[in-house]
Image 1 (tube, rainbow, N blue to C red):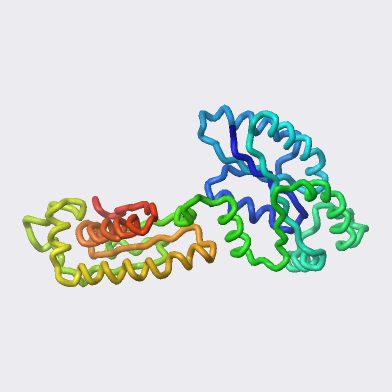
Image 2: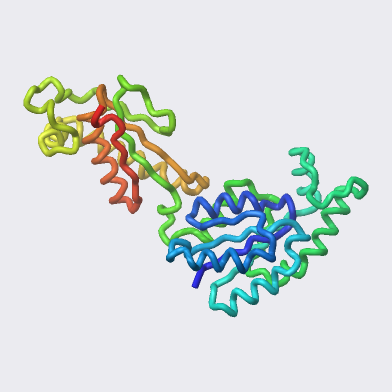
Length: 284
């Protein structure tokens, strides 16, 4: 059995944005899917060795949504858990969006006015809306507010899992990673590189960890960093942020930054997050 979300609705109401958000939440997304191919896509997903357990099918405009109800009925009869998510917005808002993006409505014929086209599509998709499991009106929603709703409806049970956290150690002599959102400079700590006995080790080894952690300032520094992350991460999540990378830098990226990055990652785990840890320059 596969958990399936069918995303339908009006053109311009946010189907593509919803697809991006659901993909960030771990759903396997197939966008702009013709209804006639739904059965085949689900069949192939079921044959993928269990790798695809959450499938999001985003159907196109009103022409493409014809027949969706029959396809959903067939999938449910096969034992799949299928939900229909319908996105709509007011005609005035849809007109505003098309004018702002200067994009042509997919059902436009060059002769009919935009408002009339939107109303025509609304009538054509009403049968799908009538049986949808969830209807979201995106008229007054920002992209962040829409994502928040989707996280609440389709995200992991633990909201912390909706954000991918990374902790990256690096050496300033090799440059700051371009993809970090927050940089912590730990060059204020004594450098074990100058101790010939410690130099061969890395921050993953006990002698370096002990050296770094025994510094009087280290404990207070880590406490304040943990407090800062505990304060801001829930707000990042509520704003719909999907990724956050914390960079920890020392001179060479082998000793201090590695040990501190590991400690920060442990603190994040204690908060219920599942951070990815990368030591970019540990062998540089």
